[in-house]
Length: 484
Image (cartoon, rainbow, N blue to C red; front, side, top):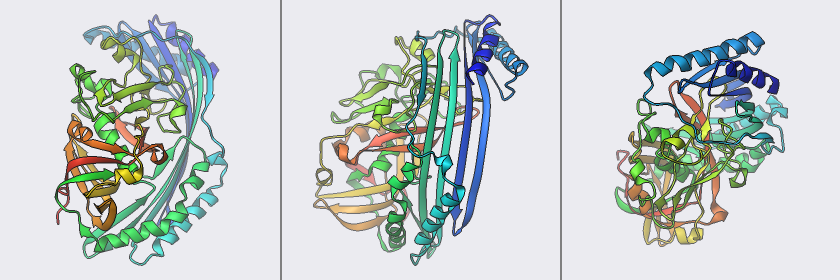
């Protein structure tokens, strides 16, 4: 793969470019899923190809190919340069990149058990046991379970002299139980909705999640929701579990800090951002106890946004996004960093495979742990606790939002007193984060994986990470999303 990358790079540089880089990527995936005692999905895929970026005439060109022969790489390199040259006719200003040193490195993510060494039959056996355990609870009408594994080996080479090899292995698992009764359906998911939990780990993650042990509780809750009280509507103190808070971070912090969105590059597809340049180092994004970092380093945790180098060859970094409530940083690339006068990229450029152009993507955007115990977070006279996302909606500037959860609990005197169905809450991003007055400590902090974040045209689907502990928010609008 290194020889392929260097050959493609040489071909691009022969065409008079000011800069070029190449990513050669080999990717392997396995998806296994069951549905009501039957196989729902069983697939295995592999791909290998090269993507070439060329900067010529002050503009970018990009081309990709799975023909890795000498002539195939030559054609792709020539096409990338041709596209850059054609784009120059319509350019408004030249692309400028902040400096970055050349790096030579080989890195592999930690993986104790190779997920691809586990037979598919063993995967299916686990999922069918989960399925049977869920449907063994009276009232469960549908059970779904899934496993997802990926391994991606990438070689990056650039004209300044970088040559970087990275291998990342990710695993994911989860299940859901549905109960349909009297024209009403309720769902409970574990360990999270929309595919469960995903991390930069091997098959060891599956044992850590304790799937079989949690199946009876989840199924019982799905059935019990039919008899639960409707979530009250009004202004209440709100406590969110860490998985729901991870999605809250993703939508109301992670997307608006993408600098390409701020500068208008995503406006046509996914909107812009309320975090205009004049807000940097001025906006009170949250309460003083709110600290958020975008951290791609392995020491932050095994997140889907963890790597050694981004797809521009920039080393993984921690970027402070919110420091003691103050908005302090964006997710940047070498190009966008130059546009706002930064000295260096924050290393947030990633692409969904060899056939796609790198974009600014979230790394691990996490709410740092607080100092409160879980008991202190729940210490309210009257509040609502919500778990596990069910639905979400947010405007194209990521400002006004509404979220629904699978299950809620009424809290009185710091204790759960009754289950609530159809819980929801809404608000404005900055008002919401400024209302935060308690965050649980490190012992309750979890780095959640979001494997399905979409962005770009054509759309790219990327994995991101969001760490959080349960937290409390004062005087939030509750209960208006679902009818009584």
